[in-house]
Image (cartoon, rainbow, N blue to C red; front, side):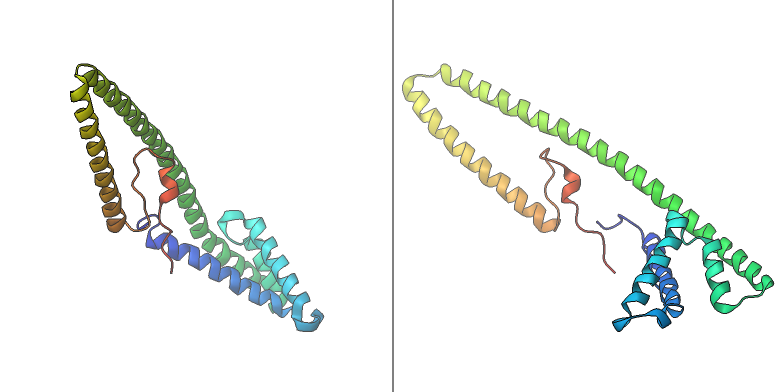
Length: 202
């Protein structure tokens, strides 16, 4: 759905994915000597290390301490370099934390909105049920006032009216689908959030 996540959020997620790939690639360097045929051992070790780094960091990005240790071990960093790298990575993590906070807020607010939509959807459904019941009752009361000949003509009129209403409803649905591809008309039937179009793809 357009606007579901703004461009900034998508760029942030893409950056996280790119950073993961970068770190994972670096991990492979110190695993190559132990790799078996096809480098499968190195690949699995790389995945395990990268996953561990992100597990420690949670949704706030790679753990600065673990990442610093990785660089220090593979690049033989001096104590001063180690301290500087840690400072840089901790500063970078502030952005990860801000992004994580925004994503959590986004999730919470969309869930609240979802629940409100479901509640309104149910109200619409119940209103439709009441309308149908009242319409049926009114038609029955009118029919009871008529003679047999009038009732026969009345039944034919109602049959034609029902046909026209069905055709009108079908045209409404077709027009809505044409104007809103990927969605469905939300008239109290089911969960409207299930009919949302897919998120934009890069």
